[in-house]
Length: 354
Image 1: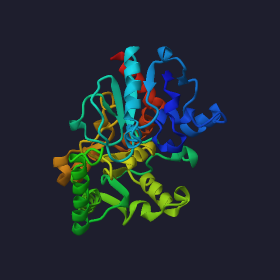
Image 2: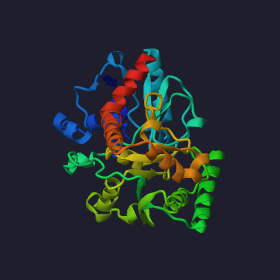
Image 3: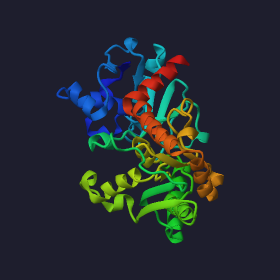
Image 4: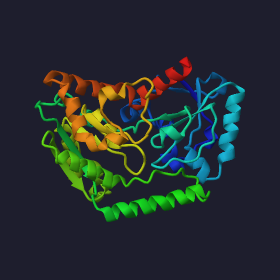
């Protein structure tokens, strides 16, 4: 796949805002292809940067739309989009972070995003995975990751932040209300958010699962995100507890966080487990080609009160063998379609065929 991007746009001081697929290629001249493969799983054999826009299969805005807005460089981005239109090339853009930003409607631009609300956007907005490292490979667990036991009771895990306080829920709603007011009055370029206290929602759903005699649970509740750990997170005991909780479960509750997406969702798939996915009108990657309801326990907004019954119904269709098959399938889905290489090659093929 050949890529063109305007090199003058790249800002090394805002690397977190660089389009994900470009990060492996713009680190510097000392960044070898072997390092690129080890860190990102992509090679210059898979993606080639070209200097002539005419030779490119796709043009990429190198920085996030958030960046162009916050640095008042929107005209620069729009000028490049027009340049690509003249030569008949699609432009890939992305919205970074938890909160969506206002993006002009343009069917010539494919907008990748983690969060946002599918019902509020046009078809050119596409869900993008959270690109995470391979914990199983890193810790030599690939030969021993499949579920070891099966029982008629589904085993649901969760390790993370959940707060059942109604007072805190009210404060969270007020905070989001103020956030939305700034958006609606034009004082910020962020899109409005639904007034959902997400930590309280997690607590409610966990409580419903815990109260069901049909469900076996193993929940570790934190008062803060990542238990408040900010340094050495990958090696901290709480991180080990997090991954072990997934590995020792069959199902994992995955609820949106500050943005309308769940990192835990991708971590669960990476570890070959089954997400209990709470659908909140979010974007899932490749939703036109992946039968997500085959891979996850899908909970619609009006089904949250029946979450235990939905998990049990899904589990009752599985045997010990088919549970292992689904675990392998979820792991393979992540490897083939939700890592950087597989995702962008798949998207490129879909767009070109359309």
